[in-house]
Length: 311
Image 1 (cartoon, rainbow, N blue to C red):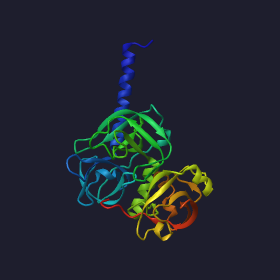
Image 2: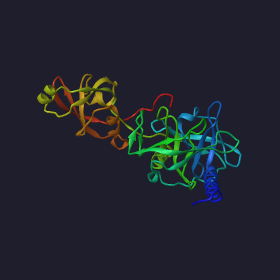
Image 3: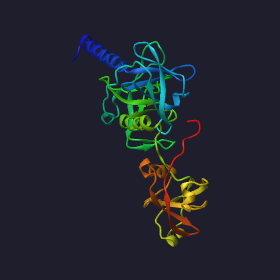
Image 4: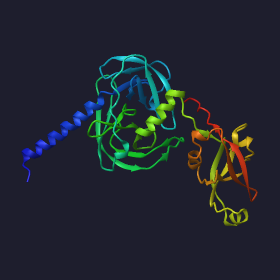
């Protein structure tokens, strides 16, 4: 049986380990001044490069970054991706040591984790909590691909978005955001951050495939399925066709019901977006549609999704 003294000693040791973890991670956490009121946080990802969250970078110019040593330097926006809520900055001078990274794949439900931020010039702040849910690949509401779902049971306060999720060893295991799920804190996995950051550094944006259609799910009646020779119970009715877009050029009409894309059934817009990765751009893919009770297969050359206005 443990005594109060030994129990207190264990608790004190654990508390010190958490404080050490925050201190270790904080060496790579910066404050970003790119919006009104409270600055947001960012992580030094590699020498001279800072990863942050898109929704906290409200301007493209006149960006300042406060480094862990208290100095403030200018930064340029290398690119942003609303789909994954990530942005990348290049420091004009100075810097800090890049974050020591762990492995997002090692996270399990119940693991104790820390959200670390630097929402200003007064040092780091931290919030302790647990991983509440983990899952596989998923799509954000704006079409970004996340390699893993990591939901948190902790407070991501003002200024924390863009800061790291830190394990008990002080290693960064993700980038925190409050913008991808209403009422829930999420972590952007390291593999997603690395993939997106590489594209933003090389070309300023993430390339995504584009058909140029607006759709809504509709049920395909059994009689129509039988007559058309399809097993698809749900399809996507085309309610908008972008003038001059890939779909229009491929012969897609308003009122068509998309059943398959390159042989894969599609039942919602998220699934359609998932099948249109950047590697599809420029490829001609078969699109099977239901039109006037009969099926037809059209060939559509996938385009590149235009840059969203205001992004």
